[in-house]
Amino acid sequence: MKGHFGLKLLALMLCAGAMSAAQAYEGDWKRGRIYYRQVCTACHTAELKKPIAPNDRTQAQWAAYFQADKHGKDTAKLHFSKQYRDSIKAKNAAAAKFAEAPEKDLIEDVKAFLHKSAKDGDAPAGCS
Image (cartoon, rainbow, N blue to C red; front, side, top):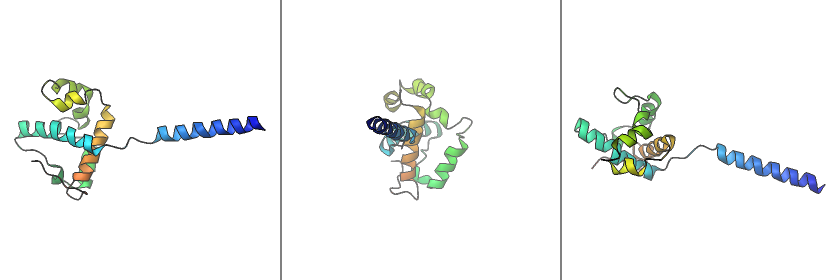
């Protein structure tokens, strides 16, 4: 009888561990704000002479942007890649700081920041 209890307990622990591992990464909006402002805004300001403010778009528009994965002639994901961060980290402190961060996590971080800071978000934010 005790053996069955131990097996049931072990199975329950394995299921709990698998469920927590299967949960998706929840973006850190504060980390996303740092990356967005120091990488995205810096590049847009230097290249286009006009920053793209988070509150320029609604939450749905930002979601559509990431869904389409288009950023000019490149993909949006390219700008979160380790290769891209390596290419700018000598001139960009945030790219250096997040040099080893997983690409998917950075994307989720920026998405969380843009969701919060969008025109219809909890805390709309412009670029200053």
